[in-house]
Amino acid sequence: MKVTYHGHSVLEIQTGEHSVWIDPFINGNGQCKISVEDVKADVILLTHGHNDHVGDTVEIAKKNNSLVVAPFELANYIASKGVETHPMHIGGSRKFSWGKVKFTQAFHGSSYEEEDGTVVYTGMPAGILFSSDNKTLYHAGDTALFSDMKMIGELEKPDAAFLPIGDNFTMGPEDALIAAEWIGAHITVPIHYNTFPPIEQDPESSFVSKLGSKGKVMQSGESLNI
Image 1 (cartoon, helix red, strand yellow):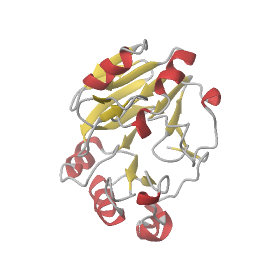
Image 2: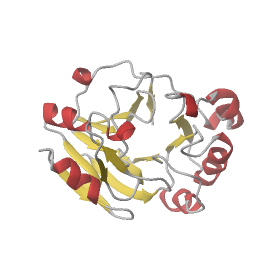
Image 3: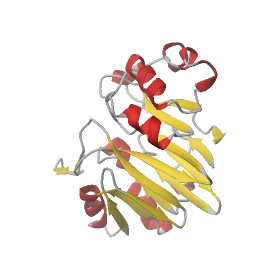
């Protein structure tokens, strides 16, 4: 499983012949070095409905005929835009030809703001466990620290964890360090930082350096083989 980070919370996962994206926020993401036209996505997985996570999902999905997998209310909203979706929810899992998806809880919010200012409720926020090639990746989404992360570590045994460290809206580095310990992944990567002034962090000194060999700062466009 090859994972490429594109800044903020955007992951591109290559597994076999399939390209799976998580939270493809491209336009407006100052950390992202690619354009929407560059994205080739068979599948898009969404953690929640905030604009900086739904991002360019609808445009990408229509261009690529992508399947969007998301929590129920968010999937229904995306489907209303003319996109093929598969709705799921927290605690549920499903095996697809391109991998297994399981949604975990996340402590955050979930709504989408339309261009005219209308705010649409998009259900519960979630984290994602994605498994393929006998490997499991945990994308925590936007979340606070919660004690069931211990259970995720014990039961799911993720090979890699992608945890928000930006603080203000999500866990900060201190809480993310606790989360990393509980989850116990072979490698933990910080996400959701430095995109906007309220979430500015030094990921190396505040987080990764304290994880030792089990932590890695990924630059935008950098890939990791799990």
